[in-house]
Amino acid sequence: MDRELVVIGGGPAGITLAKRLGRRMDMAVVRPEPHSMIYCAMPYAIEGLLPIEKTFKKDELVTGSGAALVRDRAVRLDLEHRRVYLAGGPELGFRHLVLATGARPFIPPIPGADLPGVMGFKTQEDMERIMAACAAGLRRAVVVGAGSIGVELAQALAARGVRVSLVDQKPSILPNLVDPDMVRDAEAALDAHGVELVLGASVTALEGKRQVQRVVLEDGRRLELAENDGPSPLVVFAVGVVPEVSLVEGTEVEIGRTGIRVDDRMRTSVPGVYACGDCAEFVSGITGKVVPGKLATNAVPMAKVLADNLLGRERRYPGFYNGAATKVYGFFIGGTGLTSAVAEREGMGVVTGEAELTTRFPIMPDARPVRVRLLFSADSGRLIGGQVISGEPVTAQVDLLTWMIQQGNTVDEVVDLSYSAQPYQSFFPAANAVVAAAEKAREKLSPLPASEGLMSARR
Ligand SMILES: Cc1cc2nc3c(=O)[nH]c(=O)nc-3n(C[C@H](O)[C@H](O)[C@H](O)COP(=O)(O)OP(=O)(O)OC[C@H]3O[C@@H](n4cnc5c(N)ncnc54)[C@H](O)[C@@H]3O)c2cc1C
Image 1 (cartoon, rainbow, N blue to C red):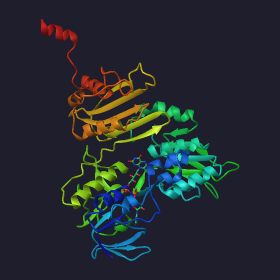
Image 2: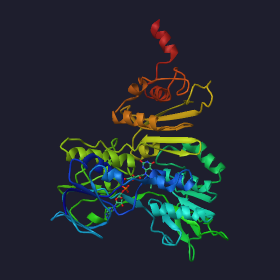
Image 3: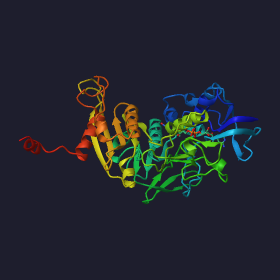
């Protein structure tokens, strides 16, 4: 059957396209899995906070928008004759084709990586496998990768009574989100809840006979997994993802290091063929260089930009800023833009400003600390990164900081932020954590004259 538009992939990018275009174009979304997943919620289903069904997205998100849903896997493309071949059904013809095939977990090709018990964490099957193991009395697991997914999974497993080690080659948790010293309390909380942190350690091999029994680290240490009873231990890799680009390998569609190359309207190198979401490669909105950005909060806006362009409304995607957040026990942690380590790697001089206030007036019940760190370019004075750790949700602050970065705000402009205050919802009107952090940075960038100098100037 021929369609005006075929979208391969039913994740956030594919669903967004269906919602935007389903009533305006004759379109089909191809997706093999029984349910699209709310991936972000999977750790919380494992923890037992929600039933597994709550992590399934409804097919009506696609079908209710007027798009056809084809439950199948695309196995081959013929871009010249504009056809998609499916594993189970008849081929689909298209005028426009969107690759929204996402990404799969990266499992490093180290010895033992193929042992039973070694897995990634992305699909419904992955979640069900971990849940089944927990239900059967899983006692031991190692999570490799202390980014948001690894940290959330480790907490979920610990809550299910599993002895968990969380390993990362970097010296701190959440290394791509915030600077190391921002997470010391969160690391202590993981430790206090029985999650063993093994930081600054690369996994070089996995050992075992019929199942994984040992994780070998670069420094020679070994994490033993074998337990006398219960189900086989698990080693779960959450060290990043690989874009799912196999369909276009060997075609005219250009592929970069981190995904399918697209321009700022999501066009690939082949006319009429587009890509968006985790399978696509894009640049940082700050540095203009290719950066990872495998987030649903990047996939959805990319798909919206594409949808608008397909409808004739010209729009350009501004780039990845990678605002993101997670939760480590009582700590809500978020970051956006560049971390200090990335800025250093980019050779950018950075001036930071930091402030710690409270989430409510400090005289109010349940006021909790909130700490904000801002990173400004030493050359331009522009905001290039922001980090927040708080006892209450941080996404609103992270989004505000992302917007300021997007607008190219300088330290003087951030200092000028007009804010609100209320006893249950902020610090006293006298201060705002973002403004206070910017004021600290401004002092470093352009210090006021010393008071003595002022006096002598007045004389
Ligand atoms: C545990 C977990 C927690 C996460 N938490 C967050 C979070 O808190 N915030 C956030 O922003 N992001 C989060 N993410 C990342 C987010 O889920 C992804 O960035 C997002 O799903 C990418 O959307 P996508 O549509 O590009 O790809 P995907 O969601 O990966 O969807 C790809 C789709 O393509 C289909 N497909 C692939 N190949 C074929 C083929 N050959 N034929 C047909 N269909 C195919 C797949 O089956 C799937 O339907 C999390 C991810 C995980 C795993």
